[in-house]
Length: 392
Image 1 (cartoon, helix red, strand yellow):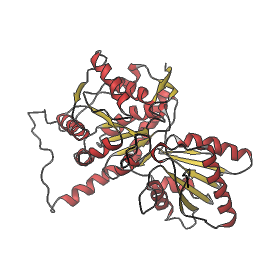
Image 2 (cartoon, one colour):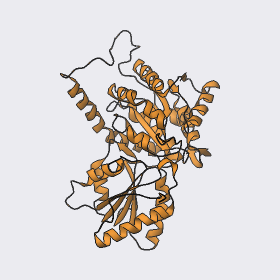
Image 3 (tube, one colour):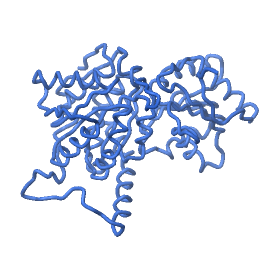
Image 4 (cartoon, one colour):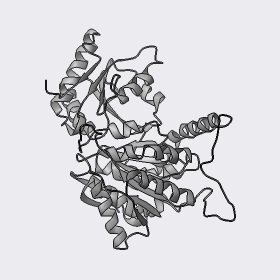
């Protein structure tokens, strides 16, 4: 029986971590992640978990501690956001290259300069090529559910890769929402007992981590890392199927909202998808065949499945809450790559929105959908990439 509660996103994810009860958790506070680790530290102090909490002096040290603990054979978690994730950069690659199944909450925040503590996706998008699996969350419920599933995905023997669970800073991390939380024994049974692979603390079978590999082997090692990533999609779907049995909530590689017969559609990540769905519904009531695709698994990106979901549309707008300066937004580039092999494909445009916590309003989604309707009617594109909600 699930408990229904009113929780912030940070509170929901802290509760998931308490129920997962990792062996080791490294903690370094950074807004808007701080509340999450404060709550988890209280669980440690009150004896609610068996976790060894390691307080460090930086995010680089936090990930270094996680790597050491995971290599030793522990089930390991941490959390960060924005500049904290950027400070982990070097160690993110080490964790993935060593195939260590660390799981981490990323409370999405803008990167400096100028300094901004509010939500956008620049942090996780900058880490998208570090070799971590990325799951994205629309609300507190999805953040809680994704964190629990992340453990099974990371530790699956076909994967053995670190996973980050992303949710929007302040918009999700600090807003109070309704969420269904499992009883502790349900989560314990779902994540199961951790079985480390090649732990350093197995002194009878000594191992070496992080050796020097020069040109004669490095190329093959990185290809093997990519091949592990290619198995993630099936594992994500399998874990989601098991999760649906205990929760009734079904997750896929992405959510296709009213896309079956859509002629125009939006592609948008995380919390803004909720706002956009209401606008899609309003357009449907007016007789406009609108739909929405919300990516959940962003790394590895499910190109074939996304192309199949969007191929019948006439026009698509990809909305990015991060930018690639001098290029298109990062989500746009993935969607364009997915659609490129199709002989007949929709017209695709790119909108940059909500940077540094700027509100994404229903009027913004409506304006983009109206533009798509015009593109579908005329075939003409006014501008391929544009900033919306920006003051002139």
